[in-house]
Image (cartoon, rainbow, N blue to C red):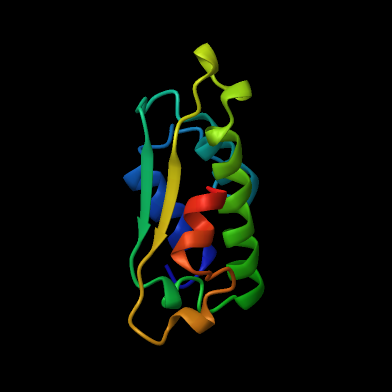
Length: 116
């Protein structure tokens, strides 16, 4: 997923996005905020080789991680969910030791768990 097209393709395939997926950042955000076609009691998004993610677009990498955070927050809110129960939407960024410094939002696991 070195460029945005690779990101869109992987998410479209893995999350089984509808055929009407718009192949842009707004469409990705919209589909990840909905997921009606893929109901679950929790979501775990694992991004392997996260240091290589969007390696051809540093500004795209930062925007992508910000998008993931914006998408995850409403899932956790009981106010935005039926029956007032939040749904965990967790993002796990897997990388080799020492690569975390190239991930824009890499923070200690404790911060992510507490915030997400």
